[in-house]
Length: 446
Image (cartoon, rainbow, N blue to C red; front, side, top):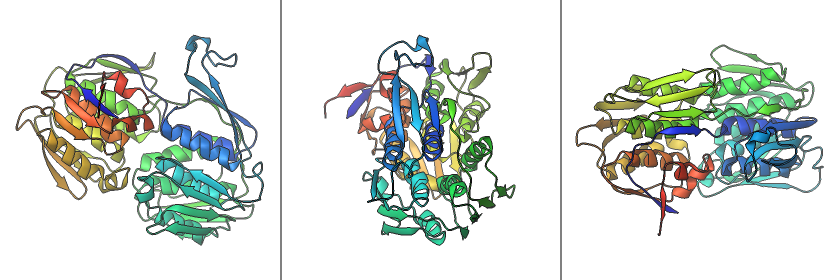
């Protein structure tokens, strides 16, 4: 799908969709655990539905409740097509039984792929994984090597890519796993407690990017009363087996990763824009994006009684240097805002942004370049030379099937000197259904 974005100022009040990271973790824990879980106001996106399909394939039973149903958490939600609750009956693998094999298509969801590769090592049946073209290029070699060392049977395409097969049992042991993506470590930490009683899993982590997401995973283990040991710098863990997960209940927090894109649009145009549904105390690392905006000259303020977060700007955006090691998913949004700043903006320490859905460093450099923005690529990031040639011009850009690239380019288009056509814009729905409509993007014939 191609869309046309006309320049305009983006203001108003927006409710942010639920966090993908929280939604997928809750679905996995609920499916592998015992009892019945209630997940209120989950993210209803392509990635989340890929995760729900994977849970069902393993044997979990998931019921969907929509706005207007008698069981709706809040009658004020009204009626319609809004998903308001998943009820998950756990016991995955036990309910599925031990015959035959299981096939899981994760679509475009890398989080689902990595977390479920480890979960598959807990069962006695082979689980075959596949996904779309991008997923087939995203290697999981270090994770698969670790699972093999822990006792699982593993087969994979060259480079540790899918199609892949994983089959337990998980026998434990000690492994060393570099984690250019934190999802490798989260996968092991979420699965290891469910290994057989008497099993010990030791994990050495010589490299760890995106540390805040490990904080999120550990918060779930803590809430479940799962025992583990760790070094303070997160370079070593030891997890005993024999535990079980209890049901999870409650609403899913809003997604700071998704919130970055309407916030970027507000920063570019000046706003003001009020964002609802975010928790200032949440462990999500991508809330640091709002600190970046403040350093660039935006006014960012919390109203804790709502809670609500407002972004506005009266003066000029300023360049700066920002370390994105913990927040590589923010590189596209940061680059979009930096294109409107005065002076250079350096986005550094984010080489792992090259191994996401796309090489986001190369892609953002290329696509902003089409709009007349001067960008210098570095191995670990970008330097955006803002203000040298005025605001970005209109033109045609490509979304590359990457939801964060599409949304970043759409935000930039709102402040461009002319209309911007974005090709392949449908991928925004992977994590933020309705974003293109929110900013007023118009469908355009291909």
